[in-house]
Image 1 (cartoon, rainbow, N blue to C red):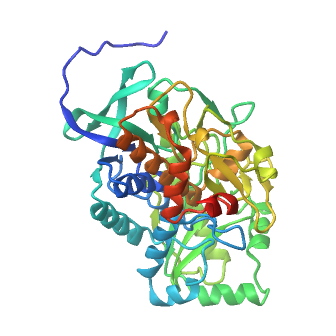
Image 2 (image 1 turned 135 degrees about the vertical axis):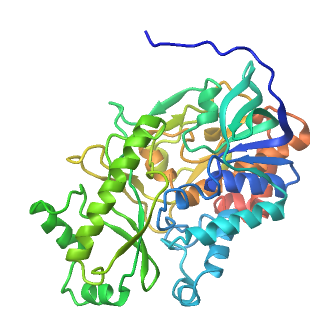
Image 3 (image 1 turned 180 degrees about the vertical axis):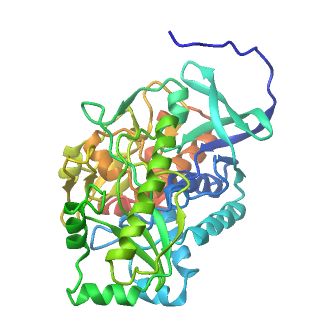
Amino acid sequence: MALTLKIPERDIPVYTEVDVVVAGGGPSGVAAALAAARNGASVLLIEQRGYLGGMATVSQVPAFCPYTDQIKPVIRGIGLEILLDMKSKMDERFQEAWKDRLDWVPIDAEILKRLLDEKMMEAGVKVLYHTFVGQVLGQDGIIEAAVINNKTGTQAVKGKIYIDATSDADLTYLAGGQFAKGGDDGELQPGTMCFVLNNLDRNKFLSSVETHSHDLKHAINKAKSEGRLRVARDWAGISWLNDHTAGFNFGHVFGIDGSNTDDLTRGAIEGRALVEHITGWLREAIPGFENAFLTLTGEQIGIRETRRIIGDYIVTADDFLACRSFPDDIARNAYFIDIHMAKPTSGMTMVRLSPGESHGIPYRALLPAGIQNVIVAGRAISTDRAAQGSTRVMPNCFAMGEASGTAAAILAETGTRETRSIDITELQRRLIHQGAWLGEQINERH
């Protein structure tokens, strides 16, 4: 039996009361807060770090996954606005190289942090950094208040609608929601400690690749076979910010549950050690990387998978493969199913749609069963494991966040806390007016 202690009952002050409380400042939380505020709601955005952006800034994920279905953008609205605004503030040579590209665009984390600060101020969103939700108060499926913890102490915030954009569905977990996690045996995709190297020679590296005098995949496999490189895959994601600086998505740390603090701690320690090992190998083996200088590792190891809520609808792999649409679609997804191996000896799962194809994400998949005034946005929405391997990426999170924030503002307008009572037609109309794409049929209808 675990040792327990009883906390004395006490009164805590209410920090603020707003229409919409958003927990989590990653892409889904960012878009949710902006959409709710732009639709007239009062909004509090709670983020445990000192900046917004989620995996893009916290974990230094080096590039945004595709916004398009290989023909047209399917992620539009706030997500596309942020991508384009970030590109406009980057190096002029970079802008020229990427001006017409929407897929795998490199992320400049420092520009993104500042950009998101500015957007929140312009929209009138109240942001509270260095804060996390530790408890929720309520009954009968209604959250009345969220208890927050930070340097100031313990306080409460009250909202009409709560948006759970924590990636791990922390708010829903605290409210007693239902969940699934990982595969049939509880296996989870590994984490990756992304990192940034400086003092590189991009032209030398690209020249070696183009002339076939050097092949990165071959070099990785050769080093693995010789015991000089300890990575599971023969793939490295490299995103160049300029001719001398690049972000890397390279290597895995296995057995990490991102909803467990002990695992996150081990992931940080093992991840940094692995990055040091990889950087040393890159200096020795790869043309253009001889003088590589490790500038930055992620504050947290990048997490691909933890809790998935059980919602009013579970999006499945069959929905993905059939490119299914739903009457309550609030976003579209064209990213491939991308499930990383749970063990070093396991294989990757990748399933792609044909160019021009996508499937819908229904509003019902954002509603946790048994809870009335919470909308979940991001990788924790209600899916099976295979579909989560597709819906989890950042552009999709922007789209789901915008839908959740818009829905929350509509509900606040009407004075209801019942998320299931929303007028779907009105929600879709507003999303399309804001620039979202929900598929040809729905967009044409509105």
